[in-house]
Image (cartoon, rainbow, N blue to C red; front, top):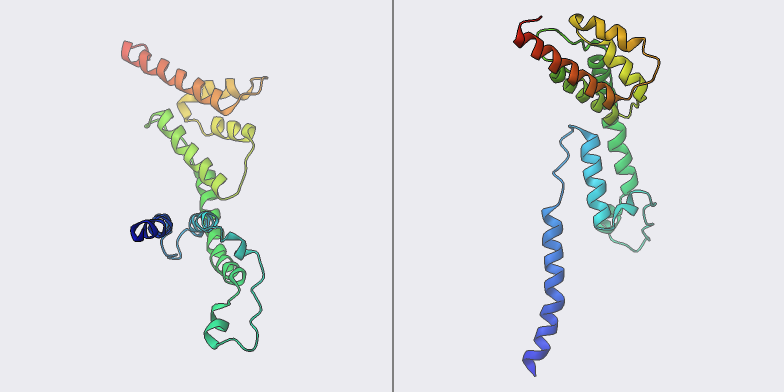
Length: 192
């Protein structure tokens, strides 16, 4: 009988211990003043899984006068701390935005590299712009990619610029891949 009463207690304790261990394994690293957006998302996800994210938007509880100094100190306004971190480090993100926009504006494809490798580089820059909260329409991205094609591709560039039907980004990339494959096969056969 004594062994039966001990089993239910261990059953109740074990899942709680397992959950706390699992939760500890997922704790985001300490904030090191680098990449606040990523840390912010990880922390928000972590707090949401623990059902604690609501404390970032709720007001801090009011501590009564009978409470100890420790309790008063522990009742900081989480939202105020969260917002102060955002204010301090979002300013640094403005510099990152400018850097990313600069990379986009200065990017030019060259004839010495394969076009598809350069298209991938350009897509990474577009992704970085999107990650910074700057959304560019697909038609703008298509026109920008056409404009940045290397000098030896000017015939295709002119053809694509004057095409009446609007082209999607994926369609353009497929077209560029086909064109590059054709150029490479012509070079191998000695026609170019």
